Image (cartoon, helix red, strand yellow):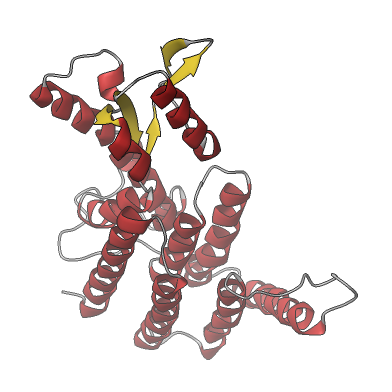
Length: 294
């Protein structure tokens, strides 16, 4: 069994588990988790290159990885804000120069492109965050750190059960993207769980029971939930996809003024939880897409 891969999986899952717990309880996650995960990922990457007896020039990939990753947590002015800020400018010049040199030097080698998955995933996750597809900053940071930890598919014994049929097929859906993809699949279990909960509580209201559950108004105001009901022109109406935290307070007040004591709410489930579950799922089960193209 590959001790390095097992160590990476255990460490990543443990850190994500702790971060998810913090996110669930407070809806805040310290950057310490992602810094530790990312820096540990770089250390594991260096060890892996050493064990692979990789050419020394490959270690240069650690520079752009470190610069881009650590810059996420660096509170600084833009490179051209209030003039030219030389430090970040020079760091990014060195970043792109080192990547360009590696491509020119090793573009025919698959080993390089396995490593290049990391900066490519950085770009993809940052773009997804900027376009609000990845909603939370903690989610984006977690995925970026995981890209450092797992640039390629981890193999542990006979796992994953659905393994990439070829080395090149790993590029169809790189492992960091697979974690995001499987996290989205895991999220689909939430309506099923809510349905079971409401059936057990005998709260039958279709389709509301697929999106939330009943809760007292007093408790709802103190919980991490969105109200699924609102007052519109004096009438109580259902809203199945509420997502505005700014309006929630006003909605609670309007419902209270109307004499409502219990409402339907939908829980604010941090996406970090599906990401956490996705790690062992992706490691053990693998990529369902390979069942189609395999």
